[in-house]
Length: 71
Image 1 (cartoon, rainbow, N blue to C red):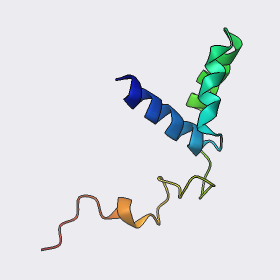
Image 2: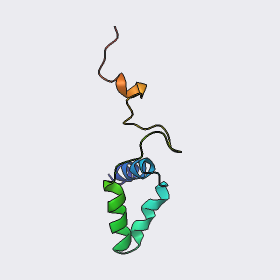
Image 3: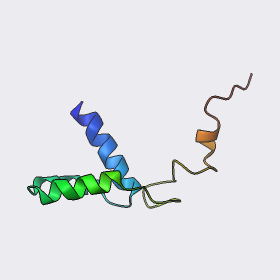
Image 4: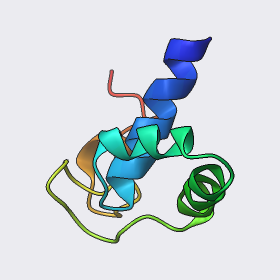
């Protein structure tokens, strides 16, 4: 369970334009955890960034084909 939550946390940090290493900021007592929570609740960057394309983008072909059947 820890590895899964770490992966989701790092993915969201990438979405807001931060490195996954920012997760270690939570080692700073109170201030680090508070800042990390603020990063987790902020909306991700629109468009592509250094970590890949925007998963919420309307022109993302992989997302648009989910649920469609081609027989």
